[in-house]
Length: 276
Image (spheres, rainbow, N blue to C red):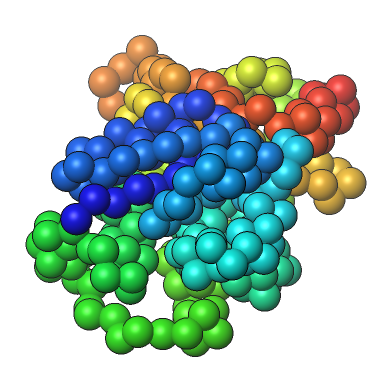
């Protein structure tokens, strides 16, 4: 049984990563993509899809606006729609639930988390690949009974994206004008001291831990400004290096390259850079 999935994200890195995982895990899947909501609409006007994976924050038409458009179209009104977001605050989640979202997945996510969410939605519409039962065993998923959109909206994984919501980092300037950020990786969360910041990348220092990110891992950088605004940017781990010239160094130098293409995010980030 063939499956067609639409992937919508303004970040090329994220789109390519998602497409790669889908093609590796779902035999014969057809993946189409769009860089924003407007182009997704153009795709949906010309073809039907079985599942939509969409970023929330995109220039032009946002993920929420795309979701409302989809639910307003008779031919797409029941299409599973999974929102991919780096935001976990309840206000935004409630808006998406009210608009008819099927599920959430939080950035950064692991391949297993992505495939589990995809299989869950395909199973509901009777298009789960044959490998779905194996993935359910590996991930510990239980068979889900058919549910209405309202019932799904009240579940814990809708409200939190399947993981505890993170609080905004209390980023204060430190001695020497440095600032703190919170780095979120698929393997966990780590505080970071910002050494250098531009619209393209951030370099910083973080503590060495038991679970460390690896090069090319997804990353979300959260920096809170004095005004209370959050500079929240999606990226990937570009490099890791020992912070000291010793094998037991407890400090890691990390560089995160940003992948977003959202003017609003750049505006908030620019404000922070101008004040540091």
